[in-house]
Amino acid sequence: MHRPDVELQASEICRLFSVSKTTLFRWENEDWMPPVSRNASGARRYRSNHVNAIARFHIGRLRGLIEHASQGENLEALEQLFAELSYHKFLAGDIMGLREMILRDAMDEDAVRDCLLWISRIWPFDGVTFVEALELLARAASSLGCGVGGDE
Image (tube, rainbow, N blue to C red):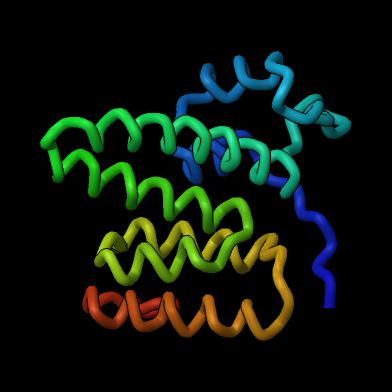
């Protein structure tokens, strides 16, 4: 079953990608970002195509940083870049990104919460992949000792 495209607020986009509103609004003027509509009160309304575009932008940037970092010897920085790349792959619609984050043990409580927000609002996949994502996030939350329900 296809989920209707949900509208996200600027603050939600900023949280998903850890950017300021200034950066987000600047991106709106760049060629790679789809036009952003506004509601009747003038507030910006972002959709899944915006999330996908921002994630793809980050993936390209991160791949360049990873290539540069792999020439040095800073393995900690390289691991952080790979974790960030996996997160953005997940936001762009690649379930492998979520699997990679969990295999790398790159999930903290905020990441689990953000991923749950993303899949509960505008998950772009079929039902089987949706269930797999929920199971992966439940395991990640359990290993962190945090609940994924409302009784945290």
